[in-house]
Image (cartoon, rainbow, N blue to C red; front, side, top):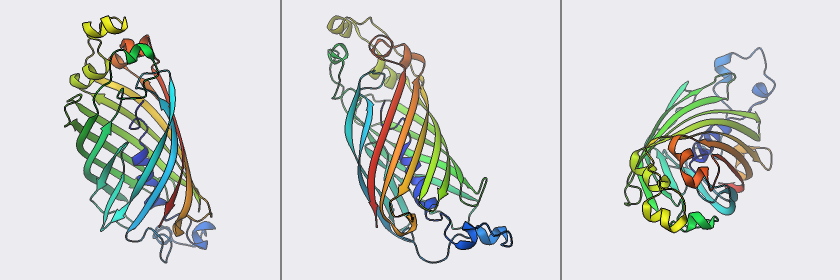
Length: 299
């Protein structure tokens, strides 16, 4: 599993601007029935750390499969940096970055997401725990460049929740897999109280023939080196998955910045030739799990 399987970047992007509105006034916190709905939707008065430019930096630890399709798991560090500058949001996208160049509008029912994306893919480049798969040789690092577009609908069940549909479209420009990745996702976000927010995301990945061949095919030379049967992988839906996220502000008030912790758990299921490939069906597992915990500081 790669970091892009759970949509970490999208989840964090949803949490930050929406969390700034977490039950920010006594009237909203008490759900005063005498307050008009449109007044409730305006959010809390006063300033928050998310008004204007802000930056979040953090460090975490992730547990994930040593390669996509592996049944061996490794622990690795996860640096995080995200924020907003001059109206442009930026957030991590696996080992990479995505920009949202369309500013969110205060009180809007619908917001749009649009911007460039670049990320690196280190799958089977290092940390291969399986000796047989390692004998196939290390793969080159892919650099995927493309864009993200999406729509966010606010106030679904109450004034502070949202549903976001996004799709990434990326191409490898480094000459590794030289293919294309399509990554659609759907995320529901809701605060629990002023300092805690959670989300649930559903996602999938579609890859073309070049991508599938690079990561999941076994050539005659690979057969001789590893003993795995030859296999010609074709493109299609590579996986589907679900991710649960929780963010907790350590002083109980997300609007003033400071320290916070995140917890994330994800499950994905490899499909089609990604599942049938010998690196998965013989040496690994189509069921892929991912977990992360981290701490960050916002100012």
